[in-house]
Length: 405
Image 1 (tube, rainbow, N blue to C red):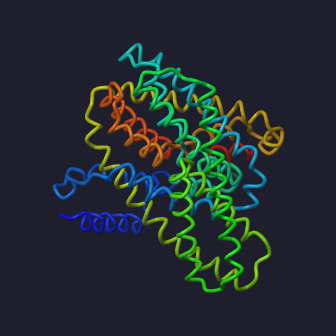
Image 2 (image 1 turned 90 degrees about the vertical axis):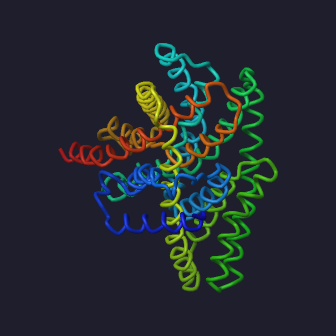
Image 3 (image 1 turned 120 degrees about the vertical axis):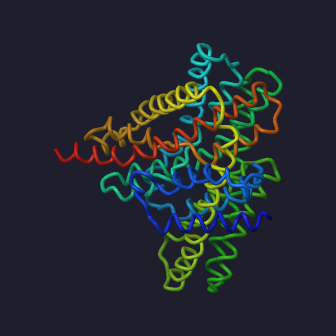
């Protein structure tokens, strides 16, 4: 069976799941799709289905991030920019080192891992992917600000996490030590370059909105910018993820200005196109995740995987509570039940698509304990995906109950 036949079957499965519209508040569709993917992997027609990390990275990630960025509220980004940027940079780096430290010492009691491997696992597990929980948060009145912070952070930390992962993977393969100066230089160059490319391409697209009123052409231009900015930045060794996100944010700021009736029609056409493409990419991606993970889930260290998952939650919670407390405006915003609000932001940091992309890059690497690392990471991501997704809605209900007292 060809890859086209397999894709059509996966698309049919995703459509059926979305039409059934099962208890999304407790068990969001992406979680169901990932679990179905595990089941589908046992069918003969999918036993030979394998998707390279480059395909996931270059085909799925740019489209998903661009639509998230351009549909992200300009007002929400402005009001939450300091928090979002801090969590996606300083917060991400701090979480990697805290989690790496925890994994290193916890694994020493069960199955010892080197410091570099522990840090690599942490770098894989740090990117957040709120695709399965943002809708729950937005549907739960009173937590809009939390949804904006979680979604905005996820868009940016995908870019910063790749830089961190690349450096740590090199350390794990060569056995070299961590150089703070080298890391800061690399991080600054790759990040600044990606942002620069995104600003230029986003500016070009926003200006083109004023020169043509044909919505079909602008839809095609948005696709060109989403993927073109990504590939252009990657070509020069910059962060394609940041380039795509920034170009999308530039577009949303262009739309935030006073729109003419013609521009409103353009926005409507863009929304229609991307609102169709987004669930298609999301559905196939999470079915792929389930299918790809199955061979690695049959291993004997599930106990350690659960420990790593809990350590990831603890590390994120420590960082979120610490950094959020730095901003007086956020303490004022969440004056009532501050701890519960911060806990919800921490718990909503689910692992997902970007973690899978990073994980698959290790398949062809020369790291030690490769099979165990891949299995542990897949298992921890799956645990996070299921347990954290299921816990978001009850947490929002409890938060609103406490605030109504």
